[in-house]
Length: 260
Image (cartoon, rainbow, N blue to C red; front, side, top):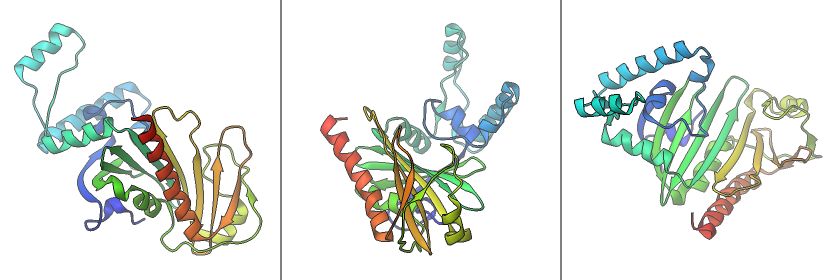
């Protein structure tokens, strides 16, 4: 699946690749970003081994330096075991942008063969893009906030999406189940891309989930809100991309109005 994060040219500039385990060492656990590999490790002892191995990898790659004697002494005095790490400037900036975002776009993408996740963390006029593969690799890139609507549409809609007509199709699966309706699966076949697009910011009491099913044989979309039955409506590909851009633009407007 080709996405803006993977492109060396264009509006997004790649900056770093980190694993689930490395991020668990470097970043705060308070994040909506998934950790697909690390979350599979249920045993706490095994998770700690994975984190220690990740720390050694960060040291070997020069991303972190060993803690200073002063930092070690401070941790001992506090008694919490937390030692402040010296993190390489570029990676420290990535973590800071990720944790300081005023607005976050989250896209869960599912194909017949795999699932991955795409995030955009917005801080002022800068966007930190984060693509998470199913094996827990996080690919980061930087972009301009002015390009976010286009980048999100590019990441969430099949590049060869076609137009669809007909009646709405009911979605009967349980919430969180990415399985597409049989009718859409039969029509779109193995080329189907399901994308669930969610925008979060402070004070969004009722966030809207925009669900997309796109492929060369057609495009369908739905807006999911709590307490409402789900149906997906056929649409032209240009309408689907416009709906994604409108979702991003509306969120930006709310952030500006609230002064976040």
